[in-house]
Length: 197
Length: 292
Image (cartoon, rainbow over all chains, first blue to last red):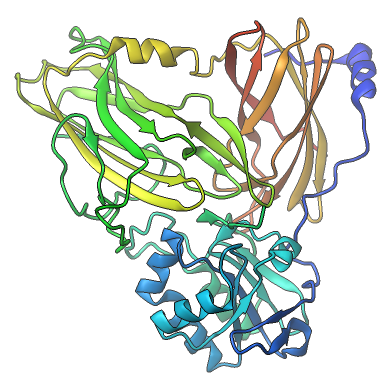
């Protein structure tokens, strides 16, 4: 493969030199978590910044097979309960365009969920965070900084086994122990968020 | 000993729920053992069959073996880098002893945008995902089974996981025409353009803004770049601009996983029309070591 070198290359490149590229939208690790207010299933308005302590955001769509697998296995419900006992607030956000509060209630009842489910049918908060997949996870520390973003675990195909790491549990354990999160970002996997067109 | 080919580095799948008979099958509710409920009456958007470009190679010779996916209109399957969401299609071959499979040869994907601006890389209508297979030893006895396990995520307005086990018997039924049709979609390694890269790492070397410059001998049409992501980098959808014979591609890379040095290179597939009717594809390696 040849490499373009020298003056000619620079001249040509200058012709296409546009404004410097900005990073794609959404919230990244190290950012201050963008604030939002969304209704829960009882119609109460939930504001992120009014919740104290460590917060987990989980993007959900019960029709997505990856989400379905985790809910049938109880992954999210168990994590929400286990870490809830340690003062962590788990917020499940549904940005699916066709799922209103009633559809989310059926989902919550079907799995007997007790974590808060927030309805984001117009996708505003999903876009604010750059949520791409279901599931897509964000972990926010008590100071309001995003300290983890990405996949729920290292097992996109659901093959199971001893080698699987739950990234969110690992990050929460480190955070609650006062340690830095050793894997702050992973590539999320799952269905695309079914945003409103 | 059977040779297992993984289309992507991942652990072998768990038990399949159902074994489907040989040949051209309509996949009905055959899903990865994920407890995914799909009603038997629900239409399945993907049909898969085990194909080869010849019935058998000469001793020491090679032939192509893979899975041909036929995808219903409007649905898509995913490339090895699925993009912002999705899951790579996977084919695992189980071959009789004496046969050795190389890595899967991925045809160039197409790019599609899902609602919300989420970019996907994959295939519409059909996909042939095959490997070169070498007959290293003696040919298998006639009637010896040759199997492929395929698994995929198919998406349209919703996503469905599917998997199927396909089986044929030696010698394999030849479908040379299918392979001929897909040959042009396999990326070549001799691009007509030169590659240069500028940009750099920032923010504690966790993020990089990368600009790739392709210098063509003549103005190309419809240039696209598909980056492989791998385990270490998460990449934004590339923005491609072509003026005359120069293409500029901007993308942002984020280091993912634990700590460690940034990857030294990024593999990508470039596609373009150098003649009006036909798309061509090349695989390139983008060096990242020179980035400040």
